[in-house]
Amino acid sequence: MESLVILVAIILLVTMFSGPIALLFTWLPAFNRETTSAGVRILRRTLVTTFSLIGSFTSFNLFIASGTLLAMLMAVFGSVTAFFAVKREYFPDGLGLGKRNGNSFGRRGDRRNGPDGQH
Image 1 (cartoon, one colour):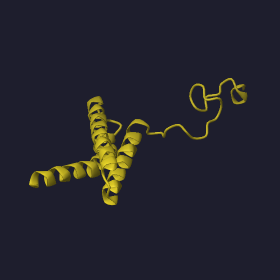
Image 2 (cartoon, rainbow, N blue to C red; image 1 turned 180 degrees about the vertical axis):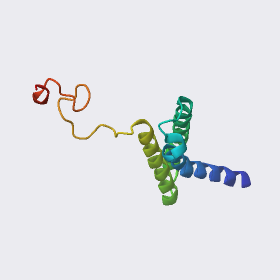
Image 3 (tube, helix red, strand yellow; image 1 turned 90 degrees about the vertical axis):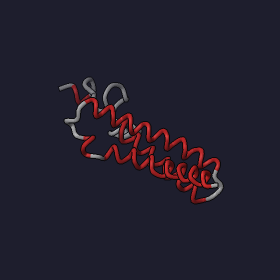
Image 4 (cartoon, rainbow, N blue to C red; image 1 turned 30 degrees about the vertical axis):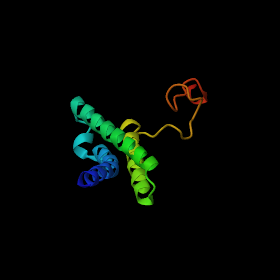
């Protein structure tokens, strides 16, 4: 019985803390300076992706298998924080779903042949 309690505690800890740890890696100033090397950036992305994937998988399994409200809230918290960590790491300017200027070809706001570009 003790090993089962330890296993459940490990699953709950991974679910609760993997998303916030991944989110912490996106906010740490030592990892996010503009002068960081390529190796540090690759390490940060690897850690964020690993923690987010592990947290999302355990959160999803806990959400489906659990019947209690507290475990479901832990799973939702882990999944949401992992989502925001991935969003901050890979899409720092947002997901690009906002209002767009122009016809969406090329870069946003790049209208060289439009009315603004004919000067």
